[in-house]
Image (tube, rainbow, N blue to C red):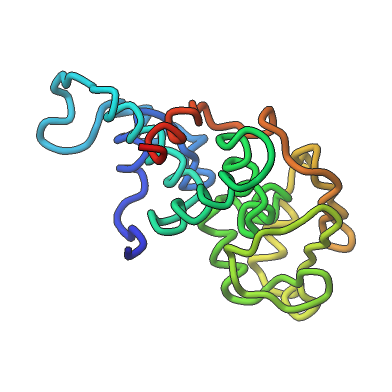
Length: 207
């Protein structure tokens, strides 16, 4: 399945909430969700009866769009989560949080997950000292993600460092001087800031 390349603000409006896909724009008065808080399209403002399947689908689509993954990736992560010990829904969110592009975003080295994915794909980061350009890599506790030496002089990286607010998630330690972050623990359910009922996703894929 091809990646969605249309206006990402339409995705937020479709889910009826901010998914923070546009970086700084999401925090400004220009955010379309704030200005037009209804679904896009001709019938976006019409009332629609939501079925049980519809609720499950919306939760799944919400998570997909939040992390910027396609359907085949979502199915793969669900299968992985289902085979892990613990609660399948929480395992799924944990795997998505540990994606390399999400970790870079959580470190504060990108304004959005889309930007983090682009930076990783363009080879600006090292994973445990090795060059990596695959955004979907699942990281582990103890992994070190660092900006490449050659990339530190780029205007983009300099801008990101200058605008870094110093706050990160508790499971990542960030060293701004060395431009690196270390995963010190696995993310917990409380660390996931998207309001999602993951059990509905489990029900959907378990049919």
